[in-house]
Image: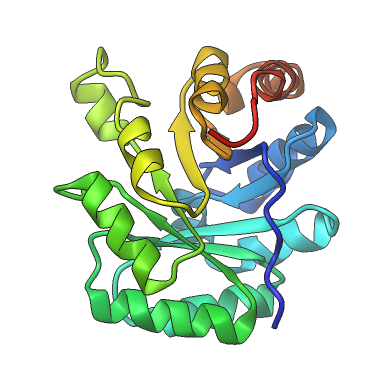
Amino acid sequence: MQKLTLHAPIVQVAIDTLNIDDALRIAEAAVKAGVDWLEIGTPLVTFAGTAAIGAIARAFPGVPVLADYKMMDGVRKYVVETEKQGGKICTICAVSSDSSIREAVRASNETGVLLISDLYAAPDIPLRAEQLEAMGVDSVYVHWGADQRNENPSRDPLSDLPGVIERVKIPVGVGTFSVEDGVRAFQMGAKIAVIGVPLILEADIEGALRKYVELSKSAYRGDK
């Protein structure tokens, strides 16, 4: 089956809430703001189940939905369920076994679900990105996580981005925490910028996300 084509720059909103009602509210604001992809965040798919994928996909049929499972093992069923629920993209942890990566790639190619690997906690991030590309994943994400940020708030979440972009030809995405991060991400060569907290906690979610979309995308300079 044919996979979704990536048209950079892409802004992805991470809907890291715990229930479908809140997810629908955030997704509606995000779509109005011009966000490109809607992410069923790991907390949402964990607490609300895969029904959250279907609920968002049905509510916003023109917007690709990403299931952020961060798969580790027994991966095929997650990829198949993503397609069944109407999702277009799903994620696998970079630190999962090569066997799981290869099985996820096979399932991805069979279902047409785009496969992205999250580089969170990989010991050698550029090297693992290169290995993942060789195994056939469609994209990799640089991810400085919430717990890491809470423990070390001064670290730049984009610091690993240049090293990954230099090593792979597949599109590279990156998690961000602010408009400024989004602007720098696209200036540095990222194809996908992910934003969730803190912007999805704002009183005016639509306004906050619209500013992010407009300013970050205006900084995109194409291929590096």
